[in-house]
Length: 179
Image (cartoon, rainbow, N blue to C red; front, side):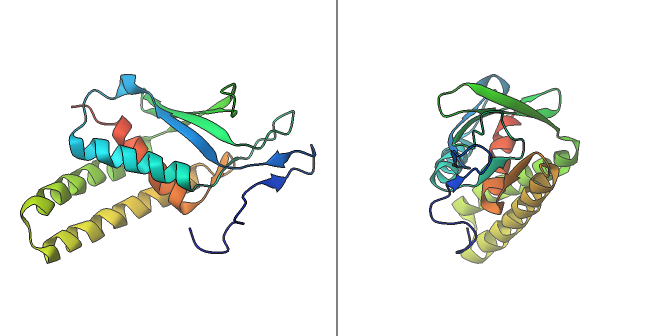
């Protein structure tokens, strides 16, 4: 996250309710029913993405909740019938809402990301540092484009920053592993 992008303390007064808003994710879970298998490399990516997401993120649903609740949030990600469900809950775990997002536009980036990650994992075991760097640059490029697409698809629903979008895309990919 770039300096100055968000205040150090992300909590903000919600003028409508007098409550403090805390627009961030404090817990994320994946619907394990949709994940049939994952390698040690993918499991490590999942752990890192969740850790980094919890450590620093900006996540603000656009909808105003009746009591003015503005976070922090717990989310669960699941994929069913080609759609991503983002279930958003309060800090106490009570469900606020679930957004459903069609994943058709993500099919190609997910496929490309899996392919480049496979190349990357093979390269780190046998390739030269220059080859690894080239593959890693391509991997980051695909990841960045997918993060921008996710941010675009969430406009009007959930405001997120770029780093949050990158980490969420990683988790969306984990949900697509079929074994």
